[in-house]
Amino acid sequence: MKFSRALSLVLIAAPAAVTAFTTCPSTSALSANRISSISMSDTPFFSTDIAKALDTEVSYSPGKADTPFARKYGHLAGVQVKTVGEAFTTFTDILGTPVNALYKGICTDLVGSLHLIMVNARFQRDAVFSLGLITVLELVLKNYPEQDTAKRIKSAMIESVGLNEAELDAEAAELEAWVQGKTKDEIASALKGEGDSMLAGIANAAKGDEWWMYSRFFGIGLIKMMDMAGVEQDMSVAYDVMEDWMGNCLGKPHYTACSDSDLYFKQKGKLDMMETMMKEIEIREKKRMADRLEAKAEMALIAADKAEKLQKEVEKEAAYKEKEEETVES
Image (cartoon, rainbow, N blue to C red; front, top):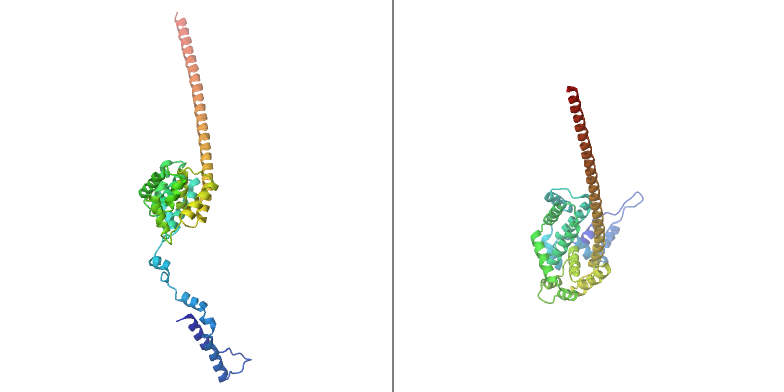
């Protein structure tokens, strides 16, 4: 039943309000009330787009809308999706060891961000994304105190969202091999879809997909290619290149990518500061260890010297006693 017609029937069925100060309505008054109620359904209010919108809202069914988006992704309506909390639990179970306190926050953020990208129906993985993800993980974990644990963190993070580490590494390596020796303009041409390279194929697929989804790791993959092409790794320089590659070459909105570029360089600066701090801590620890070893060595020398003197005194006393005994005997 349509929303406007249902509302009209409610108005028809509703009795007139009667109070102690109201006289009994006449038959003609009731008839007039019914006529006015019925005529409301024929007024412009109920025949406008508002009424149609309300009727559409009442009869809405997830994934059944008559739109291109619903026709493409409607079959996914109602599909169960893991929560971010469940994804982090999976990561923790696979890792099987606590994360260093300095890295716990950033690992949590990475798992959450990666999970939310992966469960989006519009997301399509490509080599640029793989390169960006591998770049981020290498940057974050390169100074992790225990490198064996760092490798396990990388593997657990990738596996927890349903990705294959070997495939990601292979895709990233293949794209890096192609970018090696290329200029910024050559990469831009490939991003316009020119040529038959892997990057040109990715660009053409993105251009041909109305619902193509940008992700932060895709943006970082572009930054990695800038670095390999000799683009100065400066926030303002990278911003301009990102705007050109995303907006002019790929024909996609560039604002989020440029914002992610700025965020990347800010976070990289913090990680560089952390790296410096860790090295300073390591140097201090080595100096303390050297001082402790030096003190132990000095104490050992003192103890050895003392033992040598004591031994000489013992030998001297023994010789004296022996001489005394010889004197008594004679």
